[in-house]
Length: 434
View 1 (cartoon, rainbow, N blue to C red):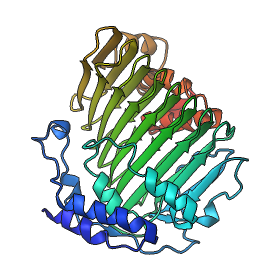
View 2 (cartoon, rainbow, N blue to C red):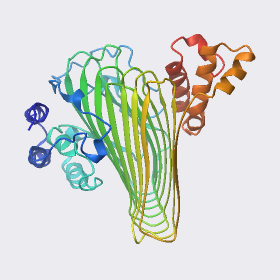
View 3 (tube, one colour):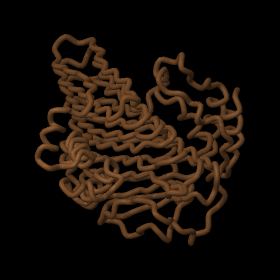
């Protein structure tokens, strides 16, 4: 067992509610038997875990009044829960909830809620699909349970923010979110991960489970805004029942390393999943998205659209897999990955996959890698647009379709200037797109 795995187990000795202790024990045992992936591991062949070869420790208890500085966060009209350096911040959170919504911290769960949470945790994660899930279990002391009862529609978005502030150097943070939507219910959920400009070194082990009941609809937005010397190994695991809908949007700005696994398991006929994603590494940053849609039953549909813009000497990985089981007849599935390299030293490894064991299906997949079109760039320059500004316009135009498809208006208003300024470090270059 290497140094990182040993120190991770040492950090697992944190106190937790008594009902979480069996989960912690199972996590410690499973993690002690786990081998970290290497470049010889197929799912990690393009991504190095060298960034984990540092000393990470749990953040000490944080005082409620500690400042956030310049952490970028969307301002949404619904309830918000804020965690900084792994600790809940009541002074920054909203306690008023819409009728019907239950938003409970694990640490505050009643005995009935604790029983439900303990029974549901891990149920959406397919065996062997998340290497760092045992570590998440072993170090779990708190999390969030979002419960929407049957036939309940939550109209305002729920925002859960996980932040690192730079007050504690080289910290390890465990994030866990469990979402249960009852039959014919509906909700919008926004998860954001961010750090201050002086956020220091941090390792986030993030895990979200989405249990979507029959006929329910969840709009899920997951924003990875961390930058700098931050490592985030995360996963989103969803289980869909019959006639349910999952609409997802993922954004990853670059940092030292971001690896996100997205697995959707369609367990009921008529389920539909639509996921859009953007990744924008620059400098020497690395972003890695691995997605898998499991079509396990007939009459389900899915659509994935991921786009990446890779700049400077950054690298990105996209591996999208559609797995259609033998009994999943009448499936329709589409997967598209498009990438734009704005530097000769930028790198992308993309691999769309179809694994089909049924014969009555409609499937399509594809990937492209390109650079800025010199003819289009020349056209803009001949119309009086400076080169730097023209490059910003073309880069933003490459992802604008997915940004415009974000139905949550408050979130779209947050994303547009954030992304525009990501391409134009001089804000004057964004005048044509904002």
